[in-house]
Image 1 (cartoon, rainbow, N blue to C red):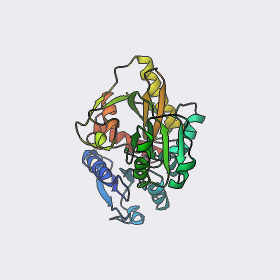
Image 2 (cartoon, rainbow, N blue to C red; image 1 turned 90 degrees about the vertical axis):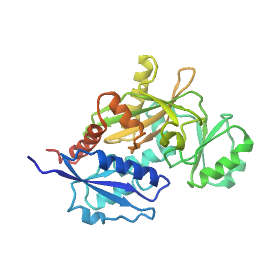
Image 3 (cartoon, one colour; image 1 turned 60 degrees about the horizontal axis):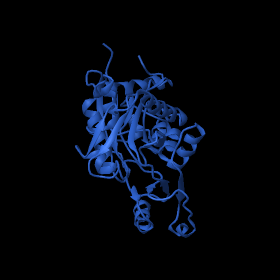
Image 4 (cartoon, rainbow, N blue to C red; image 1 turned 30 degrees about the horizontal axis):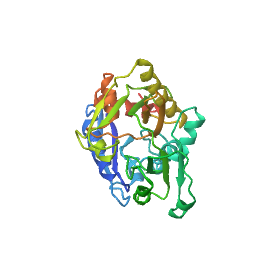
Length: 318
């Protein structure tokens, strides 16, 4: 029997999604197959301090499983640290991670790929508000341009609500997007690949928040706060369009291992792409593991797939 592979599960980090990352990391560490892997949880605190020096980890582990969301974890920063330390890791590299995290840049890439994001504007200073011309009407979506988990996101119904929404978004980022609001069915679709570029889309999910007006932070992470339907009650051609869009987004930013793309289907049948997540949540309520389960892959099997894809990417598979 070959020796167990040693996996460090990285969690926490100096981001607004620190607590969500801890939940993801603990879930991953608990559910990784202990018959195949020796698991080492590694905590990174809110100041960015590791409880294990990444340069010393190189001699202790075979692979780092990144279970970190938001800035530092999902924006290419930790990937760069791991590459400098010579450590293989799960998921996308620094450039793809940074591109997926930056909603302005990824929107441009999506348009180039023939996908359909809503119209938007970028605001970098409050002082620019007086010169702002909004051509796409009300309501609007206001959100940080480089955060995940719907942190700092507001739906603005009138001009009177715009300033408080911007104030909230700027509390999380120096770059804020004002985006066309698209009313419709909220959808998301995961993609997994084998680490060698061969990717497939999972069954999509429709998200129906029970109390919030959209899939906000609480709807994502409080059990029972939203209804999640996998697959949605939609004609097969719409299911295939959603999957095709998620796959195209994954390939457009050159993601690796896994991703999850959020979309809106308008009442007129037009599908809009909102954003891509290169490190989707791994909590007990997270969507990508639910989609994997819908096609017969248990949570531990899904995690094993992510790990094996990373080993193949680095030429380390058995």
